[in-house]
Amino acid sequence: MVAVNRVYAARLAGLVVLGPDGESIGRVRDVVISISIVRQQPRVLGLVVELLTRRRIFVPILRVTAIEPGSVTLATGSVSLRRFAQRPGEVLVLGQVLETRVRVDDPDLPQLAGIDVVVVDMGIEQTRTRDWMVTRVAVRPQRRLGRRTNIHVVDWQDVHGLTPSGLAMPDQGVASLLEQFEGQRPVEVAEALRELPSKRRYELFRAFDDERLADVLQELPEDEQAAALRQLNTKRAADVLEAMDPDDAADVLGAMAPADAETFLRRMDPEDSEDVRRLLAHSPDTAGGLMTSEPVVLAPDTTVAEALARMRDADLTPALASMAFVARPPTATPTGHYLGCVHLQRLLREPPAALVSGITDTDLPSLGPVDSLAAVTRYFAAYNLVCGPVVDEESHLLGAVSVDDVLDHLLPDDWREHDEPVLPVTGA
Image (cartoon, rainbow, N blue to C red; front, side, top):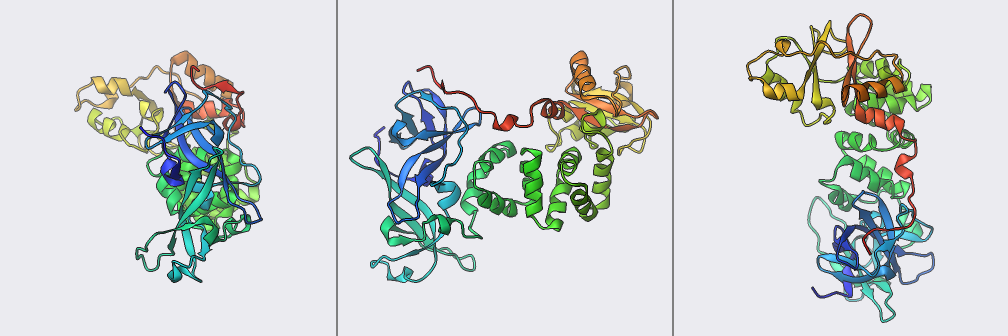
């Protein structure tokens, strides 16, 4: 392929980044430019590259040896693996500039004079000194009543409002970012959000629907979850908490001041808040504090076919889907008398019409709600499990602990932010 020296920034998003030996390093997620208070042509500083491990790093633009239609090639395979951290004066094109309101003063486009337009892309070009500069800006008038509007490409010097103060204006659109995140896993979206300025994060939080926001928040540290919920109005925050898994909702509320947590609990649906209150009654480092109150619970007369249908629920994590628990009615936690568990592998080997009561494992010990994190860890290791039942002294199933909850509490609080040294990312 032929390398290009002119390209639009949005078209770089998602391109494969290759080392000099042609090995894939990751993908482009954003373009970093400099925008200053004084009116000066923006210079391209580098790329935000998401590695195969999902860590986002900064690659200086001078390390880029070629930009081709399907890939970006680096001149060296040794790059800093430190997590990207935005510095003063640095601006993300996709994360911050797109959908910014600006004014255009182009004599060839009198129809745009005096009206607000929004930035939809930025053209960058390599100079003779190998620097990359912003030379063109694609804009469109703000849409009204859902109508499509034409896109115009103008010289950067004809655009007014691309300043730090202009980027800080409220109510900036997020449609481009939402499109970029479409199809990505919640953990990937959460990683990307953590690299954005707080203003853009909260604009996205407000734009996500309740389910999507709940899924994304659950992948953030608890202090960041709490900060995000406080930025929402109380009713919206309560709706998001209802959409979260009860154990995750309990974790974030437990990290808040009791008065704040109580305010949100009172606005939640009573049925949802009751589950969360039960979890909050336990110490966070015990089986009762780690468990979810919504495992798969079956009545003894449930057929294998019905059990498998329950465990195919897309909302279940792989750990929770690995085991179902059998109890006498009621089957909502806390259940009636706990009878035992059924492993997914066993269900797959039995006739569809068989009853789970005939294949229930009654020998597997259960966890108690006051068992410590260390005891839970030993339990999983001893019995080779990724999910285990939590049963009280009266033989009621209270919930289940899954291995992901255990790992989240075993890892240091800042594990998502841990930096790594400078190392080669390819064999070069």
